[in-house]
Amino acid sequence: MKIGGLQKLTLIDYPGRLAATIFLCGCNFHCPWCYSSELVLPEKIKNQPKISEKEFFKFLKERKKLLDGLVLCGGEPSINKKLPAFIKKIKKLGYSVKLDTNGSNPKMLKKLIDEKLIDYVAMDIKAPKEKYNKSTGVKVNLKKIQKSIDILKKGEVDYEFRSTIVPSFHTKEDIIEMAKWIRGAKRYYLQNFRPEKTIDPKFEKIKPYPQEYLLEIQKAISPFFEVCQVR
Ligand code: SF4
Image (cartoon, rainbow, N blue to C red; front, side, top):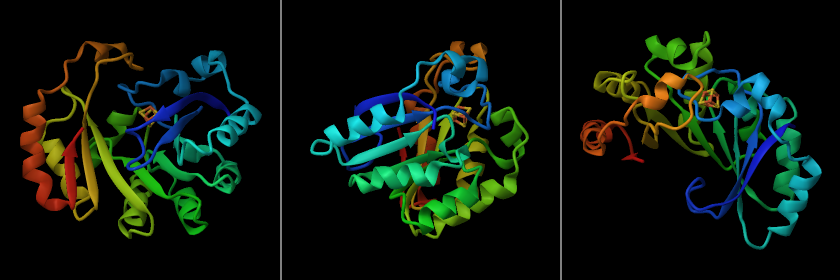
């Protein structure tokens, strides 16, 4: 596993848990407003300082009494074939595991759920179906995204869907369409875009939507979900 980063403590990324976040290198998408180019672009991954698995597990052992959760983030963690074996080692230490995923690998998602290796999943909904390729910079197999949505909606593992809302790309109608697509889900979060360093630099100049605007849309789509909030 190529570990490109470790956040030693997060109070917000894993609901209800004190957690650390591990950032795995590599992604099969190329979202233009992605904040993590160093984990996505091969030429940047090469130069990204890596943390060895040995170092990582030493950290986990030392923090066992302080932390109870571990967030697996990327990049896209599910592209790693060795992910199940890697998580098994984390679970052995007593940690709850949250997986952040773009939903492109339902087979891996199902395996991780069936083997009880993950306790919470946050899956991105990038765009309404017809804008998915544009939002990810690659040709996406929507059947796989749909399969991941269906797997999570079964509720065998706790989960949320979330969308980063980018002005100039997502319209109000797009957000409503995404919400209709996953309606009936347990949780859906709208995340306001932050103009940080992005894969396509033109997004760095884009101003986020006013919070009130997203709250207005959230109100409209809330009936579709048990929980729907703006982050
Ligand atoms: S936003 Fe997520 S899915 Fe998209 S390129 Fe970045 S890491 Fe990959």
